[in-house]
Length: 212
Image (cartoon, rainbow, N blue to C red; front, side):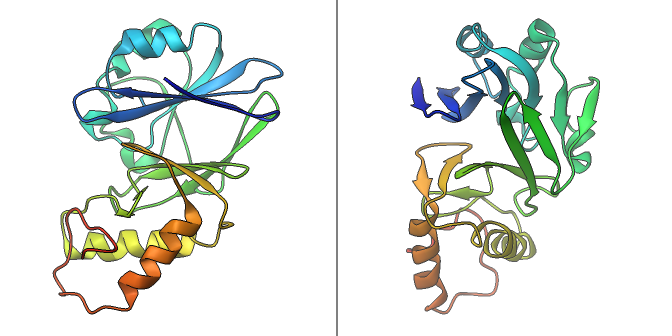
């Protein structure tokens, strides 16, 4: 389990499941209140990591199955509110959930969490911004965007990244739904190099800025 501590925020990162998904537990150091971001797999590990946290919510960045493998057990055990964008709500297992809209703020202890609607990977994908910490779900990864199934979805996710995420400060730390962390300055620079080349009009799928 990876840990990040500061005076304002504590982040626990768990890599779980066969797809190397990331589950994040974000905690206010002052009150020990926190949220869980995604419930991919291995519910016992997630629950163990959250034992010392007053879990005030479970946020689902998007409703793909690899982010929901532990959803049932975690939600039953914790009985915390589930937050999801309305466009994803019908795809999650039946539960009482609260809608998340673009620009909405969640307060957990002294930690303020901003919701950013980032369509492209799925219509209702969201990212969460806490200060300089961006939890990007499957919207942005080190080296490229999240996977897309059509050229239209690829163009949408690129527009989302460039208009909703790239305006954030260069030193914004990015915590994706799979794999390693990155920093926004690196992603902006690699995208700039991507834009210097011509690309086929049907580009989509798993795209890397530097090799597309």
